[in-house]
Image 1: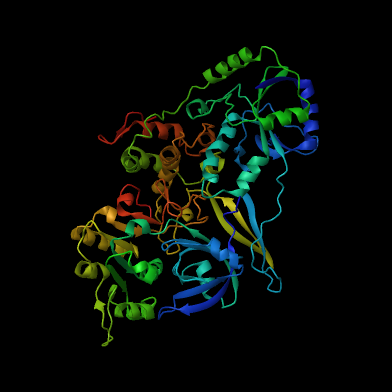
Image 2 (image 1 turned 45 degrees about the vertical axis):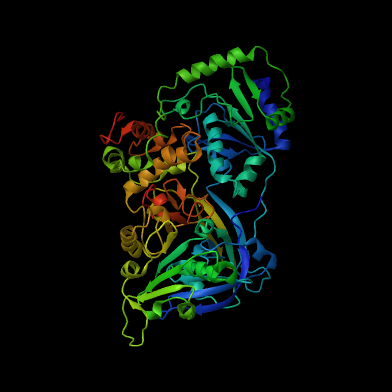
Length: 281
Length: 357
């Protein structure tokens, strides 16, 4: 029997400040025991518990792609006790990660389909994992058109700016980057909220087209009716949820929405599934 | 199955022999109530009790339990590495547990042992434990085990069932673990004509249980209609609830826990503590958003979990064994039997319950 609460020890290899307000940092971890990396084999859309001895654990989406080897990356918003401490940690410090946890995006289902990725704010982490993975030469042919609609408050609040720019140059992915507003005269992407840009840029609905949405509740609330209007069926709208968690493995009871546990049965659900559960998220 | 007769005059001598092979636990009177305790050498369980104030769940699942230890001293080689502490998983025996509390272990096991993940702490405790049950001759008015998947003589989740026949116990040895225990205690005298006597006592005990829950419609009720039955059920029940959490702590089948790190200077422990869905902190996000921010949502969560989500998820009845502790201890008289009967009889067409009490 393996103890499901025991984290793998890791070393912080690199820390990157992602946003102009410094509230988001990306942490790159390397496993202290190389064999743990194999045990941590994950799919895009899964999460892990980041564990700091003396502080506790936090459930965070995995931002690196399964195709990136030798490390795992997480982008963390500074908001509570553990995340504030983590933001003050240094490269070389030792902590733990426990996972991979949760179900991931439904990659078997998405194969051979058009995929529209809709993200907002700092909920872009598992979407980055997905995009990097899908764009790998060995994977790209498994999907038809890929659209990405990603918005943040301002250009300085966008995550992974260098990668966004590089993806925007490619012809095998349609990037629709937007900001709520900016006074930068050189801004060459969209201005406007994600729901509006979705209405403008998302491909028409079809049996072969699936949307993945991950973002703040307000964005989801206003994007969903747009997708309805565009004719997306609720089983074609895939969403990633979050809830307060402790164990991450479906045992402690904190994160349930009805009989589903966000940590184990999710965090990814179709809107069709969510229509049948209480809205306790 | 073997049935052994143990004269009460010889019972304690058997327990003393057991002390060599097992750590013994049993009900002991503490002030005005009973509690399950680790028995000291020579200490005997008090088998004249009705039931303990808190359930037996702490025997396998302590209210606070250390999961890991760690060093916070940067000069230590294992600084910040979580390590599992040494724990005593040597054989232990619980003497005199009531069948309802033993049946609760089967209920919570479905949560602690899944195909994907196993709670090693609970399972190791469970595997180390032999359960010697005590049949219930005198159920009290809050007992409703017979309609909650259990019963005063239920043997399903025991290793031995003791039936009190006045000057002796009939020990029904139900499992291999039970046989091993009976051998260790030197309990070998076969009982004659036991079946008839036991079934008579069983029927008598069962007939004393007058209250019940009706559960036959719970599975077919639509989850969302029960959830949305605010006016018919939840507003009335939530009105008096003070979210004290007593029901969850007293309950043998409430399994939720919180995890906290506790530091003592240069070292610390990661512990888990029983938690309660009655508290706002249970579900609040770091952002401050709380999906169950109102007490109505929290009391609904507790009953929906026990009487609908669990029913739908496992198809093994309700997450309750009818011990009645929450009914006895609730300071504002919220009664799970009333709530269950309302949920069972709820009609979404008329938004009303056929049964309201």
